Length: 339
Image (cartoon, rainbow, N blue to C red):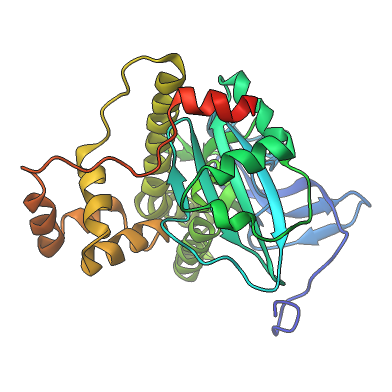
């Protein structure tokens, strides 16, 4: 579709080596006027957009062009993922949520293209015993113990168990102490900020960020300084909360997994989030609100402040919340890992 669009040229196999700078738009701040490829070719542009994903070398390029280092926060998300892919003539029927916490681990079930689907179990990186999930027999045995996901094994396995670890949560900001570190250049999507893949938010946040970029470019494409400042402000306002909410949720989940593995008291869940998920199981309005949160259409703060949803959550204030169904405790988990 992109290749067929007017005024779009796709250069496959072309790699960029560095940024090209020209006359500064802000005194002392480098201004990007294009990129130089590994073959030495110069490609000129009014705006260079970094959409290279979580491994983007943009920080090094900016410093190489004479700019200050962007603000960068990075940490290991502390999750380890085990995924197996399946194929079949009929996709499994979904029961329950796409992402389901099961105590010491969480399960993600996802549909793919061409009659394929996947099952992912992810754990805390501190739980060495559960690395046994890389064995296909052990993996299948644990999934079989999950009542809402066991039938997802009813297909033809097309891969062994794939392992993913060392995934970084990272955030970059290109305005430092009120001053852009560079102009004529910006980053979008995972190249700006990325979280672990468990919530599957990369595409949604990327599309949201691209819309912010489009709107700011319409206003300021001919004013590099105004563009840099406005895009930074709009990114922080419109997109930043999704990143920070996910980081907070991940830290809470890791703390819960580690406490269950160590046999220590589990941190209390966020009471509002807990009530929201319970109410979503029986109320259509709340369920739609949860979908909006999951799809990055709305922030949790916005959804729970709606009068009709706030009233339904208030109804649960005086009632104990039901336990999550099917949680596998550490003793049963040990037995499943041992076979």
